Amino acid sequence: MDTCQHIPNEKKQRDFYHKLRTKLVTFLASKTGRNNKFADYLMFVPDVFHLLIKTLMDPAIDSKSRSLIGATIAYFIFPMDFLPEGILGFGGFLDDLVLATFVVNTVINKLGAEVIEKHWTGDAKLLDVLQKIAETSDQIVSKIPVKSMFTQYIRHESKDSNK
Image 1 (cartoon, rainbow, N blue to C red):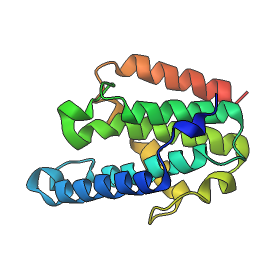
Image 2: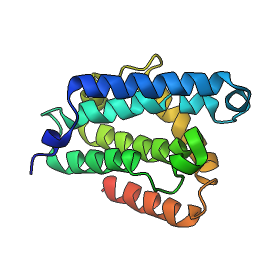
Image 3: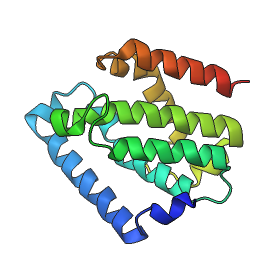
Image 4: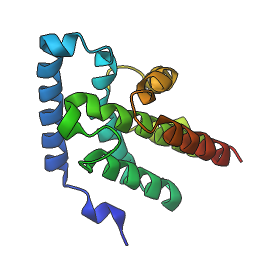
């Protein structure tokens, strides 16, 4: 099954990206958004989602990594996850961002940074963004009710990817 055939076309991707970014900028300009302690991280959400989509379509990505990236995109889209966006608003993207950071780091460790960096459209350097999110991920993940299960899974997968 070709994973890429189910990906929205370029225009729909751009529309989704701009729509999400516009809503996010509006939210972060509000009092609630300005006071959100994860506001700096939320601005990475559209760029990281875009990175996942572009990386998934890259023929240089192996099938195992593609599957992992595809599952992460599905997690972004699925309405009911650990921190559902429909209930928590933009704060619900934090778990998606942590998972995406883990997956992107896994692919970088396997294939090299240059394979992923060519798809990055964010303002800051990709590796700096990933490091910033990874350093704060414990704080982000602590907001997830089933933190210990999620953390155990990530640690287990990290050990497996280092073998």
